[in-house]
Structures are given as C-alpha cells and as structure tokens.
Image (cartoon, rainbow, N blue to C red; front, side, top):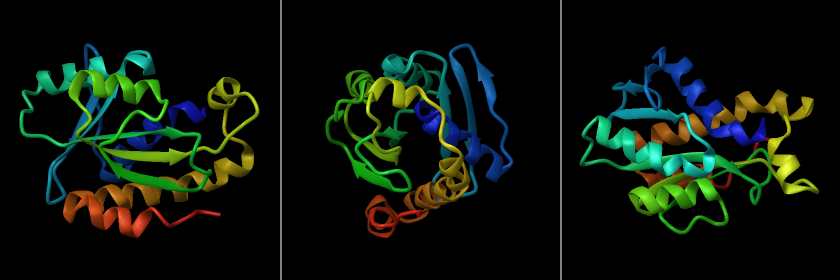
Length: 169
C-alpha cells in the first residue's frame, strides 16, 4: 500500500543490514551500528496521524537525548520514482508529520518517498502500488537507503545534493 512506503523502507533497511526488529509495547525497532553514526529504525503501532506520540515514547524509552530524528514517509507531491530529502520545515499537509512536529519538534530530517497523485487522494494513498510501480520499488528503496547511509556517514546536505535530483524511471 502506498501509505506504508515508510514502513516498507524500514523493513528494507532491516533486511539489508541483517538486523531484526525487536518488539516493544508500542511498536518495534532495530539498532544498526555499521555506519559512522548509529541508526535506530522505529515503526510505531498507532494510526499514522498519531505517529509523533509513539515517536516521542520511543525516544523516551531509550533515553535518547542527543539525537537527530529522520522521518521517512509517502508524499503525493513528489512523483513516483523520486525521493526528496529536506531538513526541518512544516508538515506540508501530512498529518503524521504534523504529529511528529507537535510531539518532538520540527528539527528533523525528512525522507519523502514520492508516490505521485491520484484522482481521489484518500483512495489513491490507501491503494496498492501498481504492477509497474512494484517493479521499481526495489530500486527506489535502494536509492533511499543509499541516501540514509550518506546522511549517516557524511551529512544531510551531501545526501540532498546527490539524491534529490535522481529519478527511477
């Protein structure tokens, strides 16, 4: 489902790093130490519109005080096959990002996974990817993971310059 693109990326990262998710009472996470900076990948168990509440619970659960939050999510304003990395900013109409901002602040990295637009926004976001899109998903996930590795090993500006202009066609 298009709406789960962020979770699909989280599962992809877990698979690529051979790190399994650990279940906690409000979601699941994995901890990856193979990069210059440590990476926690968290999937909260709540409605997307309340994702900031579980993100805050997760940060508190691990007592993460000096952290940089990255949020990966589907974005209808970006064409399918593109990702866009940005820093801070507003929610852009995304209720899950609004919840993140309300609960942990706007100082975070956004990894927006393009899904393109459909006629009816709600039905489109909640529908499955087409067969043609499914064939391109592995390449998009790989590009997003490479961008995340660049953020962790170098910096977000470098990732933005390398990946914001790329398109999987």
